[in-house]
Structures are given as C-alpha cells and as structure tokens.
Image (cartoon, rainbow, N blue to C red; front, side, top):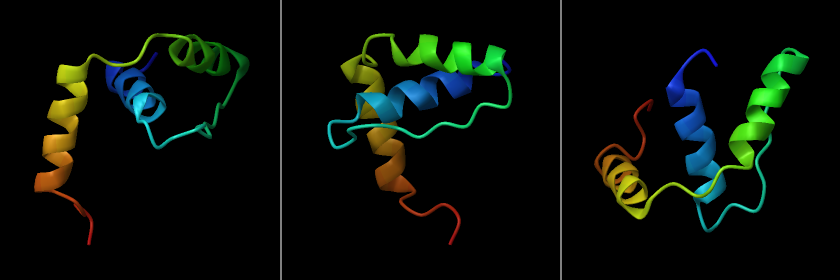
Length: 64
C-alpha cells in the first residue's frame, strides 16, 4: 500500500456508524486486493474515531 493513511481513511469510513457501504476505486488487481483486505479488518479503536471526529469538528470544511 502506498500510504498507511489510505488504510486508516478506508477503515474510518467503514467504521462510521452512519455509513452502510463505501465506494472505492482500484487501479489494478493488487490495489483491489489491498482494499478488500482493509475492509475486512475490525473497526478503528474508539480513541482513534474520537480523535478524527475532533479534527473534523475543528475543520468541518477544510476546502471552502
């Protein structure tokens, strides 16, 4: 995987209680395999979800 951040972001989306599914784009079979492996991992720990939510509250629209 290019960046561990991609894994955390994907897990964050899939861990969010309001998200039922996520649409991901894979450029090749290897990337698809990596994304599917990430999707099968457990939810992010609650402390990580809380930290990400706090950043989002501080910067709700970082690209106005």
